[in-house]
Image 1 (spheres, rainbow, N blue to C red):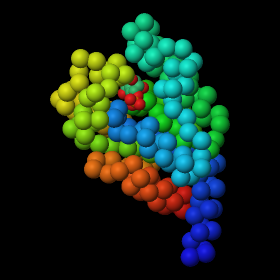
Image 2 (cartoon, protein in one colour):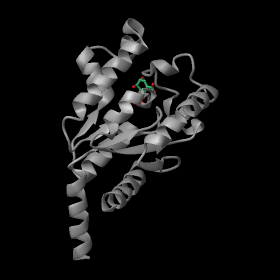
Image 3 (cartoon, rainbow, N blue to C red):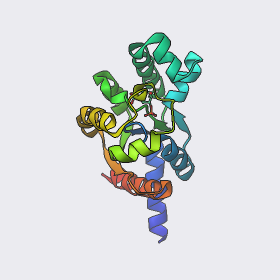
Length: 188
Ligand code: S3P
């Protein structure tokens, strides 16, 4: 029991030397999981979209409308590079961060990449009353979500060190599963 406690503490100490990068499609629960994981591991959290909003001083919707998606992706990469200069954070990434090859290298740079997944139906139910995502504007239906998810799927899977399904689980169950998998990852 005492040994188990010491082992856990050592593993957490190791994890704190890197960043835990949460990735996954919109609506898989990155933000909520990041908040709880941050409390459990006592590591500060960073929300990439929030950083972009603060930096640009406008909403993600306004950035897409006024500056376009390409501009948003450029800022997203710049933020990712900045974030990786510090370690010990839980980083909640935007769902589209995997679309640029360059971002994958930046994410791998000193971070463990944790992929959260959910079915298109689960995602739809979680995003249907939220208009903050420009990509889903006029496209809020299971078919579109499934198509885009399939387009990005291989990229998510290729980059992930740890994969956790979030369907039918509470945030606390997901966070417990993550900490167990992080322990396994750190032992390797
Ligand atoms: C996007 C996901 C969003 C946000 C932007 C683009 C995407 O983040 O970065 O609207 O292309 O999947 P969340 O995954 O946190 O919703």
